[in-house]
Length: 226
Image (tube, rainbow, N blue to C red; front, side, top):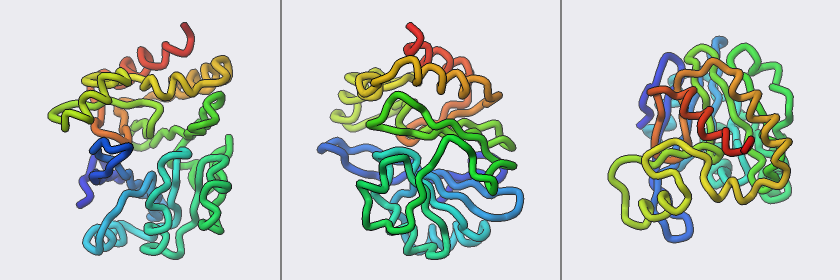
């Protein structure tokens, strides 16, 4: 079921397997000031969660924030057929089955601007991730750019987290660092993220960071300026 993080923002984790590694993925749900609902990185959910989301308000948008987090877009659209789909640049070529998928751009959608800010992280085309700032809750919403795998994990997940450098602390995983093609463009994008006054970080895998969140992100993103 959905769990509330702060006023007008909820999350749900679901188990998935990637390359034989069992892990969790997180969906984030935001209710805008006008009562409409925005779903970030949907996961698989059943009728109870669908009803829970529907009670929050009209689901108007479903977002695939990078080129990897799109697996359940179609299922989420079936649950909320009137919602508009948005996805990372280039995802429309990968998910040709999502006929009405709108590419995310550098500019925030006007309907979202009162509630969210966004940065499309340049220079990492394999990922093409957009990072979000929910203004009312001072929350940064990331996907794969920032990860923090804490607590008890399956040994395969724990080994992967150590290998990618995100076991027990917030960091940019080595997989993302290796995928960077234009460090200067990435650094410019990330400086925009650091200007937001966030006090919490939601990641798509495992942890939500609430202690020294801004400092933790600043230390993680400093890797791009070294």
